[in-house]
Image 1 (tube, rainbow, N blue to C red):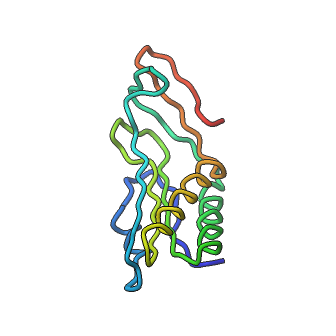
Image 2 (tube, one colour):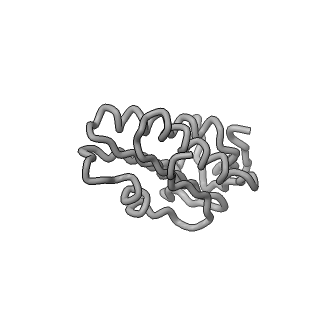
Length: 137
């Protein structure tokens, strides 16, 4: 398994540490995605949300990062928060470095898509009207 930086935490995410892991002297591009908590979803106001993580979520995240790293030959890293998050908080940081921008963008997009598909972390939104809903269950 390639060396990857992947973790799940309740603490705020350190974008600089994640980017530092992926960046080498040979890289001309670093692409980082931040998933930020927004104040709306499907036309309704969102007041806050919480993420629940399966006990093996970090293993799934690590395996996903390793898979993308093996396929692309690039260094990849990702971290996902769980617990109660407020509007504007960062829930996911995913980063990829490459010699050229096109491959970095493509690898980062693939990484984020796979994380959302495979990592067992679920979002419960608290809507402004007082109701809640689970997303991606």
